[in-house]
Length: 104
Image (cartoon, rainbow, N blue to C red; front, side, top):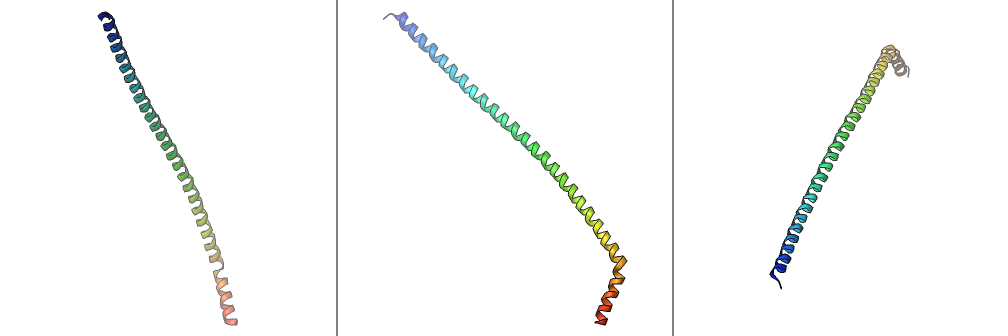
């Protein structure tokens, strides 16, 4: 066989191996870039979800605080009303109890 043919075959083989190695490197870079992008997207979505949950938590806490304030205000109002009723009627009640006990 002619040495130039063998040289050409060896050169083609070497070139093919280089191209294959370059393609493998590109594939690995693409995979690494895709994984990095995937992690970035996941991180961004987790961050957005955390922010949304924090906003919801703050809103629910605000609503709960408002309801608690309203309940406390209503309780104070009812307590004041009961105190007014007691002040207005306690002497009458005491007299009725006294009569019931003494008159048997």
